[in-house]
Amino acid sequence: MNTHASPPASVPPLPAEAFAHVDHWVFDLDNTLYSHEAKVWPQVNERITLFLLELFGLDGLSSHALRRYYYERYGTTLKGLMEEHDVDPDDFLDFAHQIDLTLLDPDPALGDAIAALPGRKLILTNGSRGHAENVAGKLGILHHFEDIFDIVQAGFLPKPERATYENFLAKHAVDPGRAAMFEDIEKNLIVPSALGMKTVLIIPRTPDPFREVWEQAAIEAGHVHYVTDDLTRFLAPLGREGGAAGQGA
Image 1 (spheres, rainbow, N blue to C red):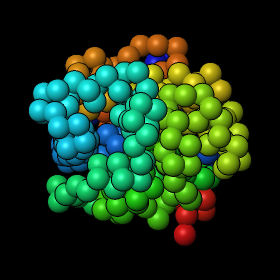
Image 2 (cartoon, one colour):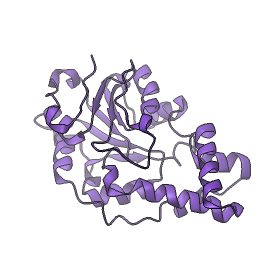
Image 3 (cartoon, rainbow, N blue to C red):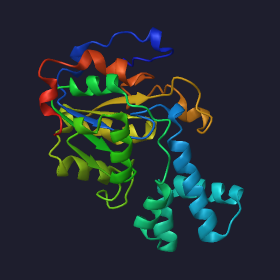
Image 4 (cartoon, helix red, strand yellow):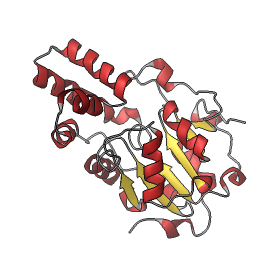
């Protein structure tokens, strides 16, 4: 049965038994480990649109439409540009992630909740390692993660492609039957659920004007086991004695 969160105050306590078997904790990065109110992802979107504008000489509206086309057809704008225009992925990633993290504050409460989780913690992102390190570093939680599996290690094949999850699991020797996946995009939980992972969908606490309404909904689906709008509060009852033993150096 799914647990759905509305306002944070109404989130019921989650039985620790539901995750008692989990000792591999896998987190998406953007809009999962931080709130959209930090204005991080909108900056990345703007940089991607600007990249298309400069590359093709388009206006802003046309660049935005092209970005959406690539995203819907290939999963990421980068994959579309590589497939159709042989764009250098390093150039794209460096450009897209030149953003200001001023509004992203350290989150010691989230860090404590992650540290208390028993076992290993990993980041699985469609972004770059550098971007993940910068964001998690600014949040003050980077040291809790053993490693980051980014779009480069995925061979530029983004989530929700099954091969990307399989490559991630193989590289880090993760048993999906003992793992949990935390994501803000519902379709990215389909494969993890099919592989045997516990899945948690992260939705925004307040409406995100930069995303479609349907992308922010508390989806009821077999592959979405739990929904929350407060990751820290969700994780708190899952921490157990000795949980920090598996964190990164």
